[in-house]
Image 1 (spheres, rainbow, N blue to C red):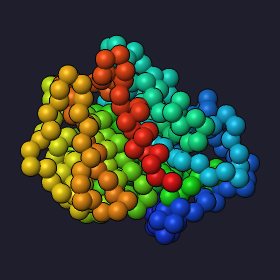
Image 2: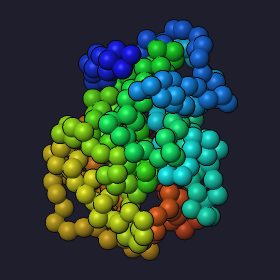
Image 3: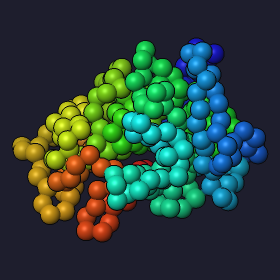
Image 4: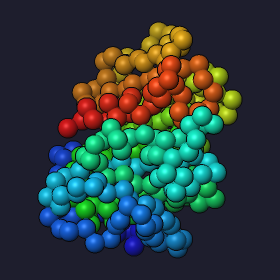
Length: 280
């Protein structure tokens, strides 16, 4: 089964670059709802995930597909419903569905041991299996597949940026680090990174480390010095990147928090969606 999934993903590489419709286009979805978890076997383990379908889903419209990976000691349900942002919690799907306005399907996977250890690449294979299941059942633009997450979820998105750059169009990594590994990691992918200089869990140097891999892969011009946050966050768009492979970096003064604010506004959702939605 895993071999067939891997061959399926490889077969889609050309489709990703061309932005083709998935096999699920034109068919009424039969497997997924917004309220019931789905199960799939990967490496002999039962893995679960939830799919959020747009309210006015049209079987003939190719949708963006966004994978939203939860942080350590959370689960898919917490990612789906959101937490208390005043206590370091994240908005549901990191605040993206309202901004997507019905143009995206969201997937919330459930981690083993409430994290993304990715032992032997098993969480990457889990991604492959979910991708196959969703694109075969629903209408997806295979050139507009994205991944985001905070902390361990950011680490998993980084692992996918390394291992599945041909499948994903872009990633958005909030306070991430190289915790889930990096198999491959030689190909370009559009990359948004965000980190706090006062991060007491994953030092900002880790965020810079994983960012710099894709600064290099994307052919961007390195900065002469690291941007420093002011009262609000500071956003930097790298120059000289390969066409279609931008790198954007946001630095702020905050701690390990997915819901960091500029004034009263949590800025990660808009930054992330603006970055994802530039790709058509």
